[in-house]
Length: 171
Image (cartoon, rainbow, N blue to C red):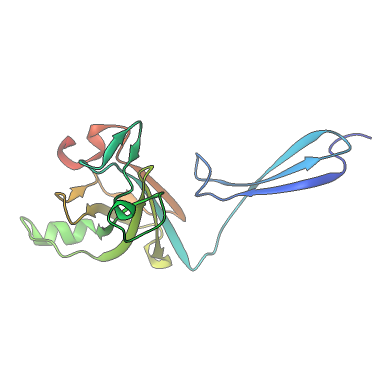
């Protein structure tokens, strides 16, 4: 027998679960004792996804974790949920036309940030290929903006946690 034989176990890793934003299908092959990895191309979705990593000051518990605020407040039984916030998107044209502000968001999405600092929200497919500034708005924090606009893809990742200069003004 050559190659991969006797597929027995199948595991799907979504683009949200993988570290590089790509989806994979893994097959464990019983006969050949091998693992086959396929990259899955996800396209033509009626929406796009935006994943943001951020840590909220005051909730940070160290080692890229936050306290389960909603659990502590008695409004959730899920120990992986930190809190709710809004994700606001702004076009460059909006910013230019309204400088020095205030700015009205082009789109607002409610999101739940987990204790590991991740949130995922869906955006309409019409955002695909366009550039937007991202602003995170929390009930107990100053609004934090991305350092620059980013192009929305089918699955867009933005990590505020890996460098201070990811936030506008390096705040």
